[in-house]
Length: 274
Image (cartoon, rainbow, N blue to C red; front, side):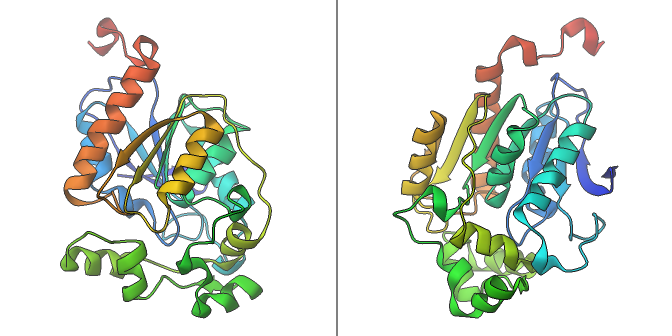
């Protein structure tokens, strides 16, 4: 079900009976939209979560962006801030890819109950010894980075290696058709500019694949150390954990971590459910 959040759009999955005192805000990554949560959000709703899968500005039905290439990282962070402010209680925020960075940056202004960072796409300034992921700096992407033009999704061969490794060919093709241009300005910030470090004052989980070439294990482990966060690794999986069997495993692992970490205050009292 589509819902509005002060000009933004979110796809909402309601549980049959809400079991928790916080909603779950899901923040998508680069080149994607709320559609990336279509497996995960309903599975979480079956476990009692009210899930709001946000569409950042420039996505269909959400806040317009006249020139997607010129959208700034700060604009996307403000979109997350807006969603957090509009929800009925401080949420648990789950960000994927770029959405993980947005969740961390937003938390400095609007602390959530907890943060889940899955396959986080991090600024190079946080990882000075690492190279930016190839999809951000490949030759066809340079005009978008240099002149803040729309950043096209990676071509199928690059996407197969960096985004969709390990998935079957049909699913890769289906996902690739749904990718859309994103902000060259944001890509330039990630690959070439300094971004302030974010140290949220809430429980944080970092989830990643051991075979991920977009959000490398070394980068994710550096983030775990930086934040003193909890960590869950899928040794044989790549970047895209959000469809098929990996998504079902991911839902269970994240759900259990949230329950274990936040404990009884997260649970709606039985008398309130009736």
